[in-house]
Structure formats: structure tokens, C-alpha cells
Length: 236
Image (tube, rainbow, N blue to C red; front, side, top):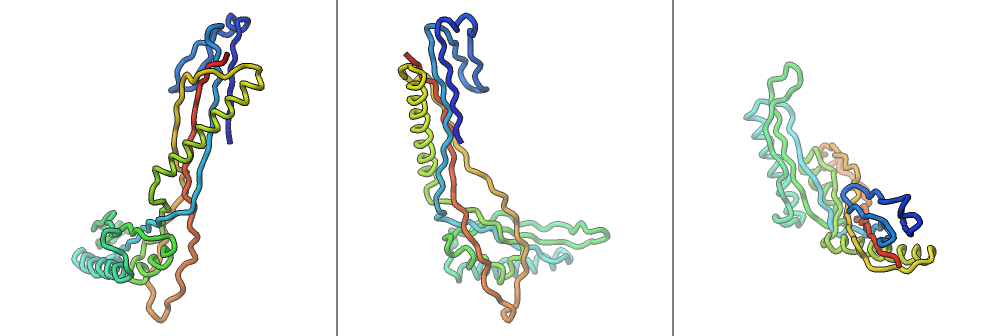
């Protein structure tokens, strides 16, 4: 979607419209016979297939006394990490997010839970496979996946280039339609954003080998960046 706003102030309008209210954070431009301007806002986005999958995997023990919860957590933790490394995931692509021993707040319970969470970086093609390996090894609170590209900055620059070109193109078309000549650029600003998507955490329980099934069918989400350009041009 794209919004275009144009203001052309001639001498006859100057007395009636002394100034044009800008959006918050944008410069206040006085409009009179000596200051004729045209303003455009253009939004563009770029979407590409992901190059990186960042899996969030972890586990939580069953309620038990603190010492037993810690011991069980240590066994599960080592089992998950060993399985990931055996699957070819480098240690540098496994990062701890959180780990904590806490009281089980179920009414009348005096037991404890140990929780641990990691991020695992892999390719989109291996996302389902690696998730399945982690769950089979004991990851019970896993499933969230973040999709990304190797060079996010390059994707942002593509979106900004498109929005910039669109802003100038629309300004030229609008000036021509109004019968004026597009002059110098007086002011420009931009804003970049990445669309957000809900990322529910899937809770699963490790299965015995005789109950093993095929990995989940996971379809990678495209990676997108959006850019908005606000520009003010003089008109002649």
C-alpha cells in the first residue's frame, strides 16, 4: 500500500492557508508563495526465502525434590546437546537462552522443576530433522522457529531502495499531473521494520524408539523487510 499527499501553495492560497501541519516528528514547513512544496510517502517491502532457521528447543523436568530435579535436568541437558552435535550441529551454533531451578507452584506442592532452553542455528532444509532429533533426545518445550537470512542488512537496503525509487517516481508523476515542475529535494526520512509473526511454543514429549514417527512437516516462512520513505520536494 502507498500513500501520496501533495500540497501546492500558490499566492492566492497563501493568505488562506499559512501553514501545513506535518506528522509528528517531521519538519514544520511553512507554505506561502515563496515556498511551494510537494510531499509524498511511499511504502515498499521485500520478501525472500529464508537462508537460516533458528530453533528454540528446551525441556522442563517433572516436579520432584530440588536435588532430583537438578540431576534429571543434567541428564536431559547432556542428552539433547549430544544428540544435536552428533547430528552435525557445530557447538558454535548452539546457544543457551535460559536455565533455572524453580519451585513448582502447584497448590500443596513442595517440589521443584528444572527448565533449560537453547537456540539452535541450522538451515531451513534441516529444521524439521533437527527439531525431531532434539525432541527425541528429551526436549519437551520446543517448536518455535525464527527464519532469517545471512545478510539482513542487505535485505533492508533492498526495501529502502524500492521505497526511495517509488517516492521519487510518485513525486514526478504527481508534479506532472498538477502542471508543475518537480524541484529540489528539501527533506527526506525513512523507517525500516520487519513484520512480526506469532511464534507459539510447541510442547512435545520424547518418544521411545519403537514409537518414533516422521518429523513434522514444516514449511519455512519468507523473510520480509519493509521500508517507508517520507520526502518533501520543492515545485516550480
